[in-house]
Length: 139
Image 1: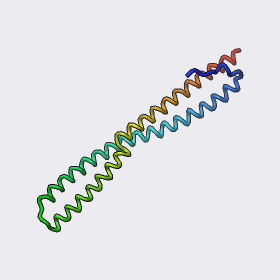
Image 2: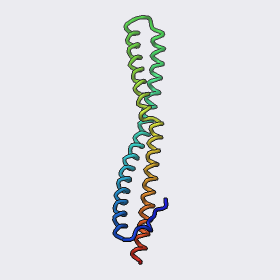
Image 3: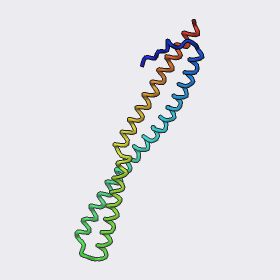
Image 4: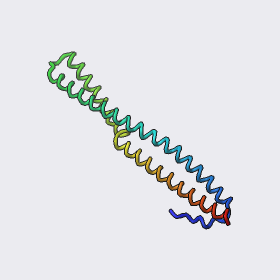
């Protein structure tokens, strides 16, 4: 963006703007660090959930085969109970995958990219104000 820094007529105004911009940049860098940590966590959690989900789905399939082959008995009832618990676990994992999965990871990466653009814009602003301050000091 092109800033109208030519409207600045005193170096003290430049100092105020530079101070505010530096604070904003520090805040954005802190936010970036937090978002970067979240992005890393989402990536790790996504892989962990996906792996656990695949194992759980395989366990459900195995329990289904076992149940289908058993006559009505307490052993069959135990396997039915185990399968229901696994199905509940699958549902919870699928819900977690929505919150921490690939889609959530990509959204986090987008947020990180937005913050990077904001930081770059603040740096461009600082550069423009510094250049104007130098012009005013030289005059």
